[in-house]
Image (cartoon, rainbow, N blue to C red; front, side, top):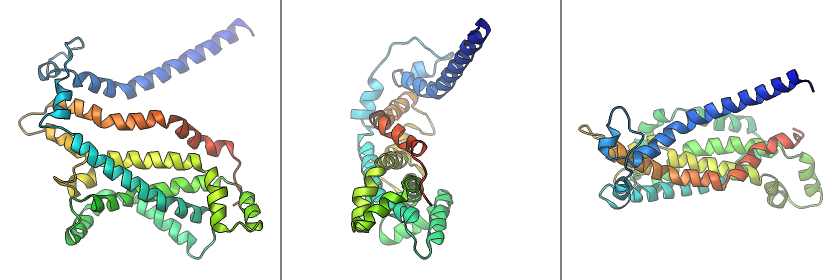
Length: 284
């Protein structure tokens, strides 16, 4: 390889690395700045020009964990809502996606279009009908009411995401099991589901994260009993003052479960997202 070609290859790799580093910096800067802010005093936060060298303090974390502005009850509310909505969503989405991808039945096209249409509806347009409905049945500011409403945006997303994984499975595997008299249910449980474990893991994680980050329904339909952590961030914002340091500390704590889940499930996420690229498309 000539020196000119070697120089071009190295220059291309260097440019790619620099571009990736730039994109990573742009993405990570708000998170790192929020982390630094969470260790500052209010005086240091409001200093101009901004201070990069300061004496760190844990008072903000003590306040948002043990103080009068503790967000631990709110994180518990978010955990309950996210867990139950994820469980119910996956229990419905997996068989529904299997039916859309593998079965032939009357109204299949219409049901698929209905699922897609519900996913495309803007949530802000559903707030008033949902509020009036929950008010009539006593579901405002309850875990059951908000959990059911979370299904309205998580279920269509989960179904359409799972459909792509089911469609990647060759039909011959299912037909062979049916010819051996395994039955539709046994075939689904022992043949199909093991092939889409990566997709189920990815969908479960995304549904949980979407529920954890949900704000619009929670702020309107929740209250004092059910107040997720995304809504609790408003405790540090008022007309007179915004407590930026405590707000940053609360945001770091609210992001901690999401980051831990992402790190723990990183292998499953990568495997699930690439499963469609390594498997041949099944016969449609």
